[in-house]
Length: 267
Image (cartoon, rainbow, N blue to C red):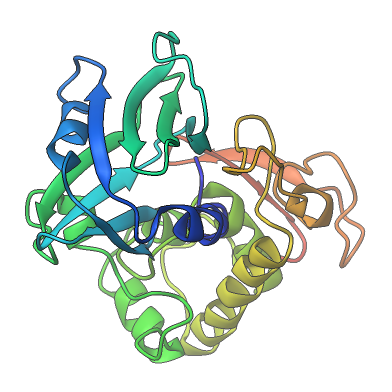
């Protein structure tokens, strides 16, 4: 699933292509997950923002088009797309002749059109924690958020409540960087401070390298990220830990595949 670095890379590439354009027409797959696409027809496009893993496309009538890419969603601006493609879930024809398309093989993505800033009908977006590079995300805020639950620390990160935008890849990376065991249920204040910095560092690496392409993630311009070549821990089970040399291991943590170092990340 695209995480913050991938979604931000998509946003940066899409905004100059979309901002100032008008949606002349729109269409979608029959599923209610995608039919909100047609509600944007006739609206002008304003700023394209990101919140956590969501793209938030401002419309000039006071509404926003919310896009969640799911696991395999891909947005692209095309000149002559095949509107009958089996994986096309939504499309928007723009006033410059281009078409914004949303392909999603597994159909886990979702679209919403809401009044700007009113996210109660999008519960996960409504309840997101602070952005990791904002002043609201601090060592103290993370420590307090993690301490409010007895769930495993990785599971809490994936919930998006302590901090927005972290998924499986960057959670494994951050926990390894901070030497925090992903299955731990408590984290000291000092470890929380290290983890807050590690979350920013892991995400910053993803942003610097255009995201992590393992299988499905492709940018709107058709490119791939390169952060997969800079991962320390995620997907590296069986290889030596870059820090201590112990063999990295893989296990399930609350049904999520997780890689960690049994020596560096002891409980």
